[in-house]
Amino acid sequence: YFGVISPEGAASILGRYRDDKEKASQFPLDCQQLATAQCIYAHQLQQLGIVDHILWENEAETYLHFPRLQNQLRGFISSALARLLVLEPAQLVQQRYDKYRKMGQFALLDPTMRAQELARIKSITSAKPSRKAITSSTKAAVSVCPLLQHVAEEVVGGKMSLHRHKAPPSMQTLAEKLLAKTTATAISTSTAPVSALTSPASLSDDLVWAGLSAKAVLDRFGPSRLSEWVKQQSKSRVLLTDTTMRDAHQSLLATRVRTVDLLEGIKIANTTLADAFSLELWGGATFDVCMRFLDECPWERLRALRAMCPHICFQMLIRGANAVGYTSYPDNVVAEFVRLAALNGMDVFRIFDCFNIVDNMLVSIKAVLEANKVAEVCICYTGNVLTSPIYTLDYYAALAAEIQATGAHLLGIKDMAGLLRPLEVEPLLKAIRNA
Picture 1 (spheres, rainbow, N blue to C red):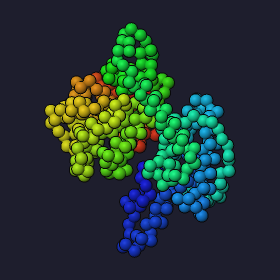
Picture 2 (picture 1 turned 90 degrees about the vertical axis):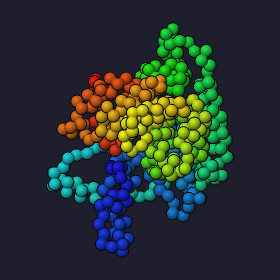
Picture 3 (picture 1 turned 180 degrees about the vertical axis):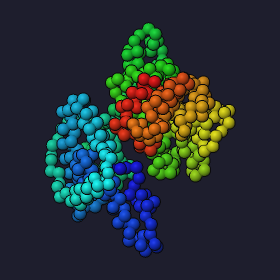
Picture 4 (picture 1 turned 90 degrees about the horizontal axis):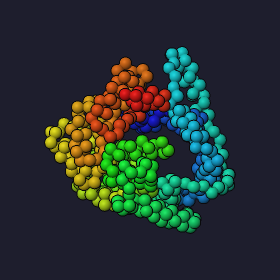
């Protein structure tokens, strides 16, 4: 399974056509061939064990009217949740791990073996499975996390959904109840008065930090204590950073989402992601695109988002000496930029250098420390750590030790190209932690 580039993108790069007429006829065929080689068709993903089940659309239904498909979806989701509900946490983790490993299976083949394997794959992928509708009517009372529940409700009956007003009334009632519950929870856990908190020196961390969000810990105890809180919390749960409002539209929509639309999104994130570690919504390409293409002020955007979402840590991506631009800026410019970003509502600064040169990040790190905010310094992952003669475990261990010496609060692994495969994760993390 390969998901780094779309078949259309690969065909555009690899395809060579004599003229537009040949391209019009051959390009779709090349896309199909590449899609097959990438194993991204639904039946291929099911055979690999990545997809659990295929729901076939009925040819007589449209995107506006699809009662049969709706029943299939309802039955599948109900039965799937019922199966997962009986599993222990350890079983759920193992199941997820096994599925993740299936995405990274590979083998090194000689020319003869490669020809045999291609022939085998061709014979498998050419066979199309029969369409089987899901008829399960299994129903189970399950507890779904607010974020997943919200996504499901928005898809079916959201303001911008094509399916709006077509869902059963009970679903809208459920959404309203869920929204009221999550809003009340967010308010009750985020607005406790400072005077009600005991000093960390007088009670155990478990008691002091009980019920507090990452934002509350940072504001009341500082970034060093937040890094301790992260260690403690990670023993029992996964801390989530949502990058939708920065990386999602930067990578998929050329960073063109407007401030007014982000403000609508953050209203939802403020409740459905109330327990998240942070929201990455600034930095990267968002700063210059705001001014050059959207005719907006990135500073006004940050302040407006902060006002709408006061109780979750805000996070930004900063390119070390390049800050949020595309050239190396003077030290005082970078330092002042960080100071103003912190002043206008930024909490976590995710700092990286594309060459992993720590000296290029020192000014940013120092400025973040002086602003009493969180410095999350990143290692850019390159190549296969198990086979590369340059980017070895010793290389990453030495880099981690160098980053630790800067006073950074958190260390991140930035796998921007999707190169970090499952078999490489364990030895890499072990080397970094032992550095």
